[in-house]
Length: 322
Ligand code: ADP
Ligand code: MG
Image 1 (cartoon, rainbow, N blue to C red):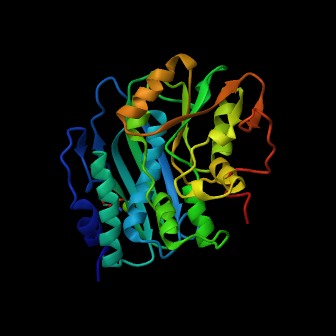
Image 2: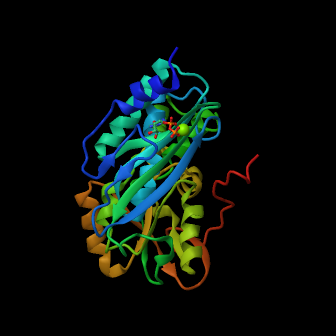
Image 3: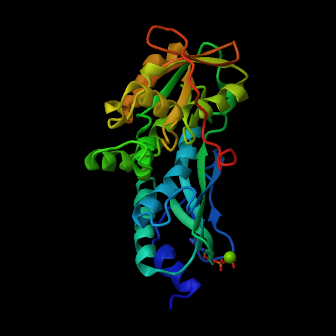
């Protein structure tokens, strides 16, 4: 039998990376971080619950990746550089095979971003994974939700909707070929946090957030916090490669309200267009201009001809769904 401490040691504490920013990692009552002088800390927590955010039999390698990816995505959305994270894990059993795979997926992504695991908590219970990430950025440079300006362009990174399409495949809401489904499912299980792009957009973008619950709802947060409105050109939204093959109505629905995309939605003055495109190129991340921030409150959806479109869409809300 694996004890709690053996488990922590074997699967989480063994993986030590030397990083001058981490004065003390796993093993004491607290971890100690040496913040880079003059930098501000950015902190965010995201919890993934079995049966809610992922299927109970989800591939543990992908789950390890995803639970850290959604947290890193929040750092990306502020323009912060990852430093470290903690992991609070509730597990029904100490299954060595599951733990080996989970930690493998987790550390593969952590190492890619030089983000060290510095502590956490482990308990027996329903499968639940809660990560807190710590990042840093120069004071005053964070890409905040309340900073959109009237006249800003609205941009989105990467493509939207394939994660939602994969879900539609699992739910048999849409019939997909096996190859199509696995390509879309890749987007759902292995989101790419846009860390490099977020950092490159400091000083260029005004407001930003990451799209976790669907573009309409998430952009709504920027509009509300910045006290502005917007028009979106819904047929210029970049649909994922698999979703692109679907009929227009599904493309619109899943790009606008799909969720689980973890792309960045950001606003920037038109004078920064060339800089935004250069930032996207430098990070090998597509950036697409999809609308503009306006004084008139509310969100207006326009088609290719600039005509208003009315769609009965809403964003994902944990407490609004049964
Ligand atoms: P405490 O009793 O002070 O809460 P624990 O006995 O729970 O400490 O944990 C011992 C050490 O192992 C601590 O440094 C804690 O941060 C770390 N730890 C516990 N669980 C995890 C985990 N899942 N991942 C990483 N570190 C962990
Ligand atoms: Mg404890």
